[in-house]
Length: 229
Image (tube, rainbow, N blue to C red; front, side, top):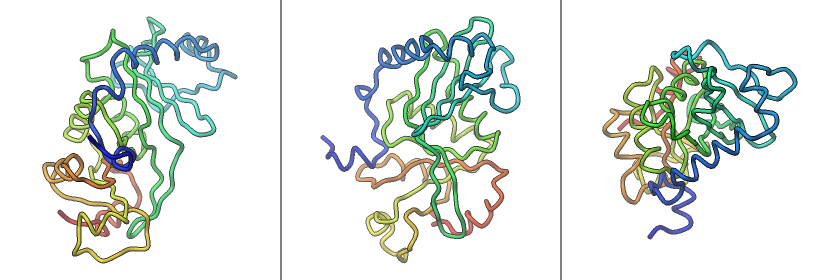
């Protein structure tokens, strides 16, 4: 049993939080939206959806996005079938200060996958596509086992720099010897094995994955200012 506070903060893994049936229902709902139907057929003008960056690594797919008041939605579309293969709803862009710099990132809210396309590694490929396009990504605070597997694959294969993002008020529990900071968050760097243990271990406190593109302008300063495992 977890406390409500832990549910809000932890990378909590539970398949009952968001089932495969829930995921497929969200895909179906997305495809039924009136402004998405023309976009699936390539008619983007005036529909709110825009094409994102360079072509996806598999030419059969394209990536579309739209920005809402409190979220950024990204979909991976099978162009020939006019179907949504993967849909991700991110929380609105967040700007934070950490040691040696500032970061603007997207945090995953909900990821939905079409049952027709499961098992092909498309969610991790979509995340990597966004990272290669210069977007800093942060993991959700709750995951299914499938979501956990996606992030484990992503962190192992990404071209970006993998770190952990920790809320500063939890430093005393995680790193009692580290001095206090005025920033709300701190970055943690180290081997992938150590970072994985930090993110998913029992008794963890407000820890998330964060992946920074290699193109991040202040990446060396951010690494220098991070806590080292």
